[in-house]
Length: 324
Image (cartoon, rainbow, N blue to C red; front, side, top):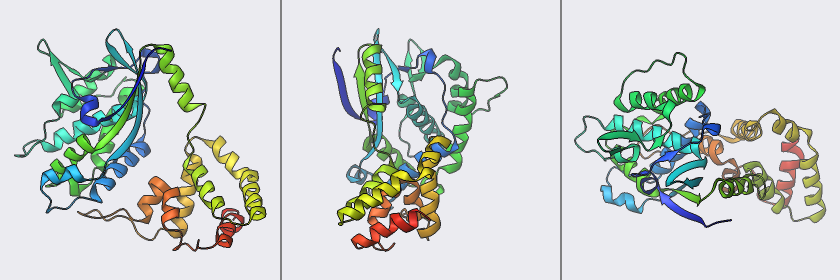
């Protein structure tokens, strides 16, 4: 394996003046409404936890940072090809186009054009470049309508997800808070870019990250938290066996990739969520929002309020509540 570089980069560092391409064999953009809504809720929710209208803009530098995941790049003939992460980068590019549109006719603007397009010899091209997507991206960039007739799945998804972004972007961030949010997105949101210098190496990294040493799912982390708080070794083993032997977990996984976490979100929301984040400035994420994005962390923080204080409570949660 040749040299491999891994570097944490802000959104600005990742996209400014850099060209990314996507090989023909993995060109489809497949994100749906659900993924876009989660992206918007995560980003805007994190920002609104800290934002205060009384802050000067330079105060944004002290706001918390946010990790948006990793991308894997293969460098070939001085070009950067995305091996993993195109869904995230495409959606991020669409969000930047929306933010550009929202800034039009405002006196105070953050220049983000260079993160979306770059110019060479008088010709503009998108930093995330795929030929078949260019007409649609042009229309979105210029605020024009676009005819989806006979367009590919990727192009149709591209256009529809932009409409979703516009629908879900909070009203409270469209006013005075907008430049603050854009500053935070560009400077405080990070991705890790892993760069390899051959396709073989890039795909080895991709397979290692996704097949071997697979990250724990939120459900796995929820289970680990519950079991770790059962002091009695015999009961802990029994609770573990109860969890593992439940046919419903296997059935949920077989039903689809997102079905298992969605089931846990629905269960916990139905039983414990009494508040949802208000759509106003300075509003904080409430139980409903947090369960939707990090239910395993929410349960840890809300353990006392849901009756998880002693070892027996954690055993009961698996033996009775989870079973029911």
